[in-house]
Length: 174
Image: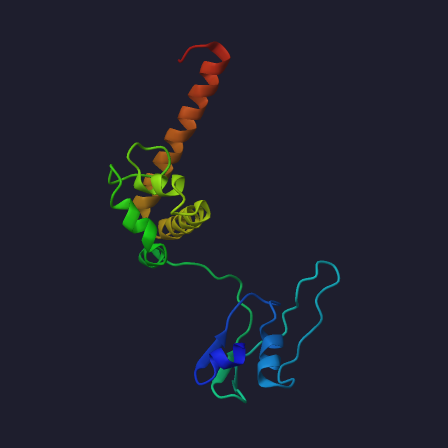
């Protein structure tokens, strides 16, 4: 099945070390073209074996590029892409009462209404939020203004938390 999907094109295997890229390459080529090692007994994870990029012509057509393992794969300023992948959330958000709606407890939130009536799965919104948070952290690494905004928001949240604890303990605010 996978062979039919990648036939006629160029396919690149990307992933962390020990994920099984070379094992998959061997299976797609039809014989052992890459050395592989058994998974570690200690944690069951694969071992780093491939150290160079390799190009293979596939028997059903197309080519396959096997790459060494990556330390990590992540987003880089992907807000537009996240918006496209979750276009239904972006579209619903246009109908929210407030333009800066966080889709949590605001009145007139079209996204929350869609979750309530079942037209938008909760898991979809959670995935959207997670990717947006990850993207914000990545962008903040290079954007001092955004880092400052995040720091100010965090300080406000922490101050509100401390005030709530103080009120709970003493029944009054400072």
